[in-house]
Image (tube, rainbow, N blue to C red; front, side, top):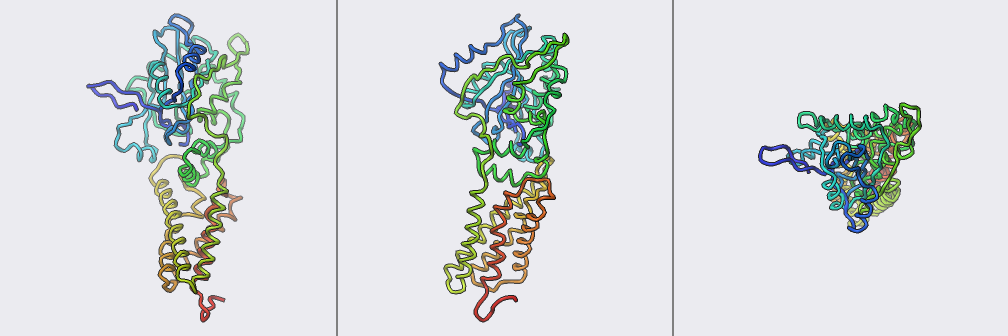
Length: 431
């Protein structure tokens, strides 16, 4: 990680936090030496005094949650440079005590860092990530102007920027720099809409961490379901890599030129590109539906079986605790965070802080105590909110029906259970 400047020692470079959804935390990937040496020779950088060369460097997802989105940097070689330089917008202060909370509040400052290529490459190898380099065909005077601009921007007084997962991260900064190299023609070429959304991209990149992917999907609000242009989709390193590949641009003499003239996979790491689609949620929905049915069945038996009643009560309490805490945590994050996309979310219709009331309801069922009207009303209210979330889904610009499928069955089961579990032959229940 890149550490803050001190008088005693120079800063160390940071592995980047992930870009887009979530964060560009750096680290890059490892593999066998012989194949890597051949790959590096195939995409050799320009030497000092040769025409200045610019390349887009893309690293795949890493092993950690914070580098799951991959990474993007620009690699300059030749021209006035004695050694090739890599400019990386994913550096941050890894030593700050409130690193995690600051990120969740949307108060993280990242900065532009420069390093020589061998340092970047060794990090790739150490972190076992795949790396692709795309050499760009751009005007040399524009490339030199960009290099000089970055050499000024990388100074400590200029380098910092406020991170935003969709509009200001390592990929968007590199994308915008390339756009300037060809006079705005990249933004024009990528102005068309795409079917992907930020929710889709975040969920598929987090698929190595299923619990985190599920929680993020639950937490994210309508902001991450907005339609995107291809240019906006370039906030994701892997997408930017693929989007620039076919682009052509017109130079000052009217000649049409390919933006990418050479693409090399420098290494295939253990941690490669994200899966093409997010993990499906239907297995979880099936489990919760079966669990809800079992809970209701045990509750019906609870009038004659103490063990069945206790198991039903335990299931109700555990579900209320898990779903309620998820709703509470995401509600708190929304209240304290400035990050776009962190709530409010329609998923709160099926899991919110009020869901914690199922915990004492389950405890009462375990103990065999008489059901209270308040808890009974709350279970009915929670089921009603879930049904309302289902009914209103066509009117809400958010992709959340898969969350309704997961969380609604236990809510309906709790309402039925609360009504049925306390019924006795002498007390047939409400009519």
